[in-house]
Amino acid sequence: DLLPPVELETDDEDGDLPFALPAWVMVLALSLLVPLAIVFLPILVVATVKSRRFRRRRGAATRDRQVAGAWEELTDRFSELGFGVPPRSTRLMVAAALEKQSPAQLREFAAQTDAAVFSGADVDVARSDQAWTEALAATAVARAAATRWHRIASRYRLRRGSLRLSHSNQKRHPEGQT
Image: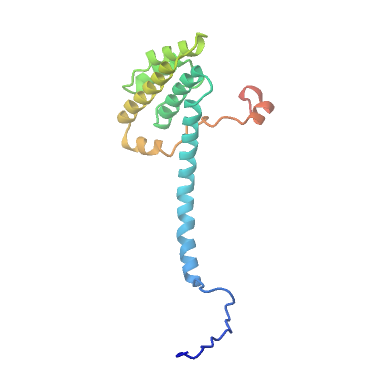
């Protein structure tokens, strides 16, 4: 017992809080975080929607739907790049319109997609993978042909109508009528 016992004062005014942030730090943090959230949350939402859209189409239950999903992904990406995708048109009509606007060759891909979707024959895995490879390659060609501004904007833009109606909304409004 070389050291005598030490008595500590226990009259803490702060209670159980060992450390409190000054008010100016909280104000500064909020003044930085709120604008950052306003800017980056919509970007995060768009990226999430695009990623889910891609995965849903690529992982469709049947391979003919996967091939159709490759075409849908292609038209959505072209639209997001600023190319005019005609509404309510056949794949061949859309391909012809897009070929006039970009160097991508799409008519053969459109015909092959129609054959895979409407033939009634089973689509093999290789054909599904080929459709996705062709769609992504055509998108890369269009992306290279687009202006820098369109390429940047396409990352934060969703094609109008690419968000599908919910199942309950389709019951109330059959055939997409709103």
